Image (cartoon, rainbow, N blue to C red; front, top):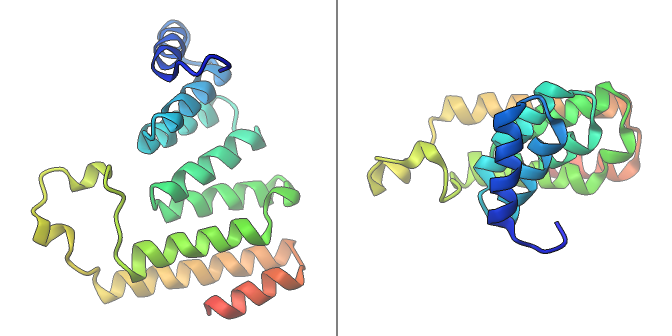
Length: 169
């Protein structure tokens, strides 16, 4: 969007989608408009819709992963990376991306952070928002992260990946 009218762009792409909700490019561009407006949860949802139309588009998967990490939706980011690995998009899965996923995990499950726009926070008291996660949930997610690392190292054999995994574990 060269003119950077993100609200107008969102309206235009939304109009296209209302006519034909199978337009992958419209969903992807709507996600980008939402990202420019810092509406990351909406961007994740639009990316998911685009992927329903074309699940083999690695560029949309990359955006989906980045938007998911921005909103601290660890599971969605991991699902996206696993999909890239399954489709042999190995150049997209690099140590920097894996570090960001690890940071996402740490923020969400160790530091108990939530994105301020998280729709799950609506109606919660400040005390409820700051309650620590149950130990079982943290342990379950830690196991999921380790299993994810195992999946990554089956496809990618790079010393920086191994170094990162050792640091996190």
